[in-house]
Length: 336
Ligand code: CP
Figure 1 (spheres, rainbow, N blue to C red):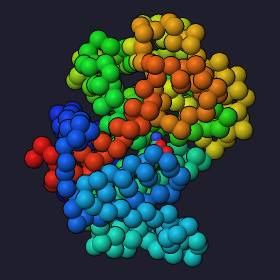
Figure 2 (tube, rainbow, N blue to C red):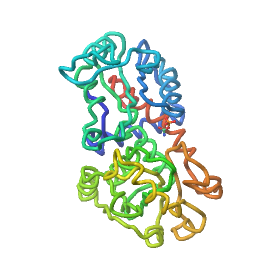
Figure 3 (cartoon, protein in one colour):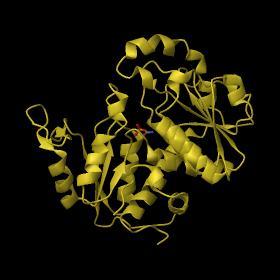
Figure 4 (tube, rainbow, N blue to C red):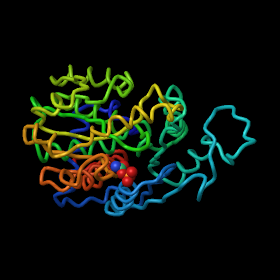
């Protein structure tokens, strides 16, 4: 039994096989990989794309999805080993994960960080507790990485750009009025480097550099795949020659739990918005964003509505890659 918690646990060949399976499903191959099977989708945070695409994907594979929101329509859960449960939580993950494993064939979890202490959030305790106690594969629907988004992004890039070798992938921080999760940014670094892009991380200053865990993993990936990873705080040089621009906002890790102190720094960098002038510096780059995206805050209308914006394709591909993923985890991949 294998979980899908991070793409770092899967080889490039295994991920490419899932992308090939996704492409086959997208082009019309019919699969009943989930016939008679159920996936539990557990959301601790809101979603539009992830919930819809998993529910629809399970149905299209002949299976069934149930959606649970602990603390709203399911019991609030405790995750700490040895906890004295005299607070809000009515149930421990040790029971919840094993009970769901008796009903379901897959368990998928969305659990964002608490944004108070990165040294705690970076341990990803909640999904790791599920993975430890579940008796079926666990899928990460976004915690401190977003591996399903990674698969969708890479399928979309392969459709639009072909091979990654020699292509410049720019991951740019953008302004947003609130500090957001670093998950998609971490994931973009991981998957772009794994497939051999020349990756540039563009962010306002050193406070916005991502966790060294992901920088180091990306550097190791790049070495293995023949790409590169570089860091820039200069908008013009980062965009120049780019083949692909990926935008995301995230909170500065040194300010976790002190967001009032980060706000003035963040507010000085509204000019990191992705606009037509910056895109004109690129090598006719494609642009994408994981969505949801605040128009004219993170990205201008002109970029979102341009022919080179492939964000809707990427969102569609969530459906196809997750079908391939679910089929793989239950041993029913189309390529089997
Ligand atoms: N990109 C993404 O995960 O979208 P949702 O938050 O709407 O699921």
